[in-house]
Length: 190
Length: 268
Image 1: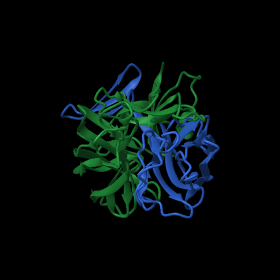
Image 2: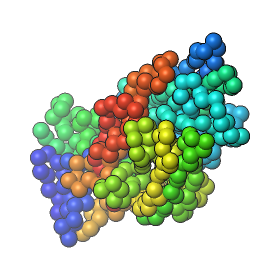
Image 3: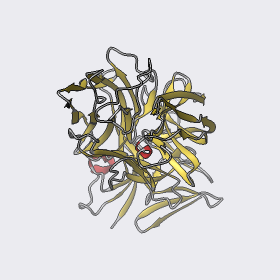
């Protein structure tokens, strides 16, 4: 084994020439494992979009919101986070509510497409089927990130209900309250 | 720059710049207060990779059907059990698609695999996957809305074969592993191994490293999927979605130019 310094960095090399330690490389170390008690939890309120057909017009109540929430104070030097998140919706079964997902990047919580033909065609409603969907009309995103010594969670939510017509005069679409359990490891590359 | 390699039984072993500020033993005793000075400290906690595995999975083909002159778009979803992670508790994992769309693609959050085939309208839909843990299992979930094109006969996503590498960390949902062992050496050097801090750091473990010259994946910072525009009361939506991570970009209506921030890292 050899020990050397290069450019102010310590390098340890094994007898086979393999690099064991080089302090010029970044080594990710943990500053915080962000949990409050047993579980950390952040919630985002429910939202409903509606469309009503009246007097030949589509009267839309749209949802577009961004909610950026401070979750926990972390070491000021922390930059990256990885860990777990689990999403459940109140009052309804979340299809993957039993799974701890990787909390890196953005989680697409919900997405949908509803009819946006304006107005909705009146002929040929088949029982149990909707008319064609031509645009993405809903999306919900959740992102954990670190900023200014805080672990934060940001939600971006857009909801739009299907267009209506004289036959079906009202539609609504709801994203229930979303509860996110999380356990996030924060740190930086030393 | 003056670098010091200091070993103190009370604090461990540290490598740090002693000239910024003037020589100060503080980094040895309190390394987290000197993030720009400390290069290494054996008392810090370094998450390590415990196991790796590569799994195969197949996303099913999906087809939208025409009904009464209109394409019926539907929401589809499913899950695939890839294997068992082998840990006593839910572990932190990282994952990567091997050879997807011509390159290895890190799975950071929800990963959009496909947009709808065909016309611009169909490109507004997507199929996506997520990876996670349920009990003892590593799970891949998939979701999709089949693209719709007014007047078309069918729209479809083809089946896709996936190869997924999963790294399992020694940190679990319960916390960090118990590494400190008073019976282990404070510092021991051998021909192929360095052990420091009575079990706290050991070069036989695989740590998360950057700036190695052999980076093979990434660790993202913040968002990987973005929304642009705003939802107005127009007949057609005036907002769009976009996912862009290290050259892998999928987007729908409007798109945009946002890209994910990340650090390139090397994992075993």
